[in-house]
Image (cartoon, rainbow, N blue to C red; front, side):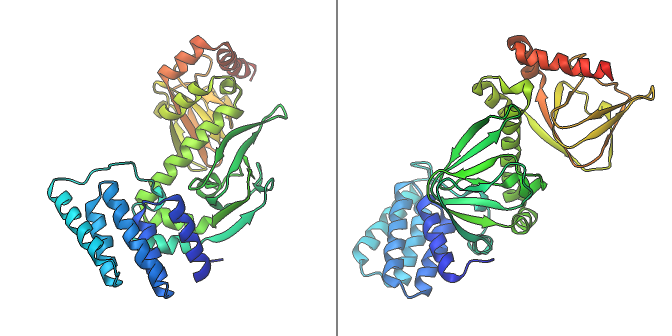
Length: 356
């Protein structure tokens, strides 16, 4: 259900509160205020943004907002003229600088104002009470959420029956992207820690955004993959006991590769200097001696250890979409040398394969 004009205005006001420096939010908001005859508010807001842009070293953008002030017949002509002169002098002094880091809604950063407005208007505005689950681990749903107000806890249910809180997300953060991008079951439970207001996007609107605007799509994919690897370090026995700083090292250095279902991949194409960990999906490894090895979520393989090695002449056939995390050799060997729990799990992989 798309946002009506009133809810769209309220959503943009909240978005501006979260991302006060984002032009893709500020400019359409001024237009909405003007369209609804809230001229006094539109004037004040345009002047406020002009001051803000000068303060963060963006005189070119300040000039644009000052032009809007004039179009709106702002009565404070003296300040507008003074700010215009300041912006002109600052621009003449060289390139624009970032006096302070602007907080931007990165997902729409490469879109035009109208494109961003079109995407946001497709959302549904929802309110969640304290303690309510917004999504539940293991459920099948494909919605994506952006937090406007409040905080939520992202909790992972562990195989031993316990739970761990991966992180707390607040205004400006988003979640639910795994299900939207890869159509996977929910990887964690997200619970409202406070009264929370969210924008809810359908998978269709998110996938359309990724298709039409590749840069925005690339940013979302990178975010998805980073969070997937981090979640993997918590539910996979080999990584679950590692210190958080080493989990973060793994997240920062690893890559995620995707393979469609029903394709064949020569093992030699994957057996480079890395450890491959299956994040999601299943596959069969067909070896030249006629034997078959099944691989599924959590399994490891690679040429850097005899415990997880598969023959270079083998063929890997995917059953469904396969997501594989590529762990660099330096990280794998460091973990093998430092952590008995990691070494034990790698050796356990080898024992399972011998048994087969």
